[in-house]
Amino acid sequence: MSSASRSRLRASRPTPRRRGLAAVGAAAFLAVTLAACGSSGGSSSSMPGMDHGATSATSSSPSAAQTPGDMPGMDHMATGNGLSDSRDGYRLTSADTTLPAGRQTAYRFTVTGPDGKAVTGFTLDQTKRMHFYAVRSDLTGFQHLHPTMAADGTWTADLAPLTAGRWRVFASFTPAAGAGKGKDFVLSRPVTVPGKATDSPLPAPAAGTRVDGYTVTVKGEPMAGMAHPLTVSIAEDGRPVTGLQPYLDTYAHLTAFHEGDAAFAHLHPTTEATGGHGGPDLTFHAELPASGNWRLFLQFQTGGTLHTAAVTLHVG
Image (cartoon, rainbow, N blue to C red; front, side, top):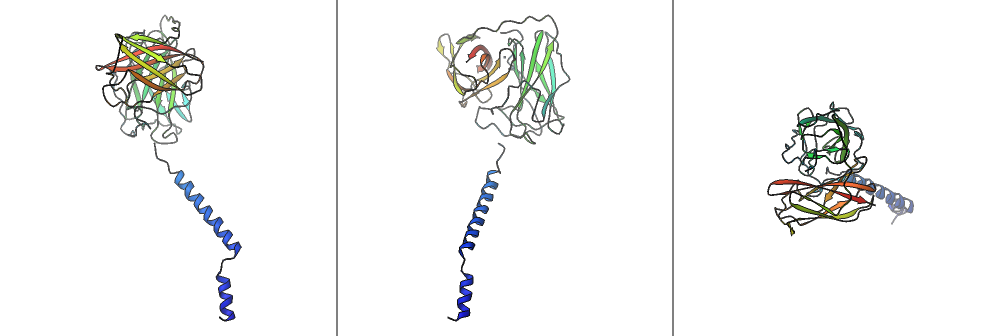
């Protein structure tokens, strides 16, 4: 081999410095590739003024997404206590600050986004695009409805007769697009029902209650801010009920409100409804953020009738 050929061969061989630079370049390329892959995620109520909304209309939204929740029968975990009318640029707006007492009435509201425009696209959450609650300040009145939406983004909730006093209305929803896409919101506004109002003391904490001939028992000792299982058992005339029918993709819907400020919490079911044979035991994922007394409202369906049981739970 000639000296010229040996020189060309040495020049073509990678030096240690070149090999090091090549390794760094390959690592950088891999990191960028993994980051790009990781960022391409997909979208994922027998009490005064209490009505469970069994006959409320199903919500409609022309441009709403059809994506259900992450787990059948389980909606997303919304952060916050729901006591504000705005969060992350989204706002619950309404011209209604007072509502009449003793007769059915409609509450109209709109959800606006960070751009100030009405939001019209909402993701399905337990088969509904909007869950609406009306709760009296002493927690004796409760309604859970599924309002209808007009094309311009105005929602209408048809409320059963309300008793005089201070109320708070909550809207629970998940935007299908925009900055809040896939994020769960609970926003609320106060409402006054004029008339002579008398607040009732909250019933003491108890292991259960009776409603419409059913005995509802609650087992569990949740601690504030900690995830804890809660079991609800339903019986009729001393016999376990095994014929619960699906309601909102689950066998029971459980909502809680905190004594004093009416802070909101939704306790998530852990069992998928697969037919009309649910019960007698139902398990919920409970994570109540504050200590004190909470009023639990359990909704379950039998024979085509929706029942609402209320019981007070103390959280340590």
